[in-house]
Image (cartoon, rainbow, N blue to C red; front, top):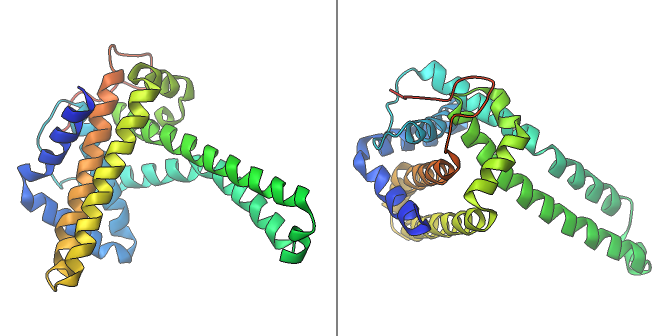
Length: 237
């Protein structure tokens, strides 16, 4: 699929069942209770699994325990992948915390060193983010097998099959569409109905769109059943 087809399909995807969009919206609203956060993440993960299984309908909100566990797994993957970014953040904090503004202004080398660290931070954060997305999709492909999210050689190979250029461009397009969606949602806050539309309809719609788009993009890397820690997902009820 080209980028236009991926985006078009993903935008239409949530409209197949507005009731499920609303259910996800309710879960999002209840996320301040912590537990629903993992259900939210788990459902988005289920969308990826369903898409990779060749299904075009929104998955059900059944087997809540399994959905919670899936959400927890995705959360763990996110924490592990964020470690390099956290380490660089701590370095930046240590540098800025041990130096006053006056010291920095009198030490050009320290300033350039800090700038370099910030540049490295941004580059690492972007690269890690790109790899993490495919890692989560790869875990979905293997039906939630946690180890599949850390099979780095396979993950990089999948990105290579998609094409780094196409992947980055598609990722940017997805981000722009999501930003426009959230911007529209924020604009609706100027009217009373916006306080209902944004968390109950617009936000869950965008999350569903993003999960579907990433899954469709990931299918570009599937050309055979790879050797793996477990069998890839075949069907999602």
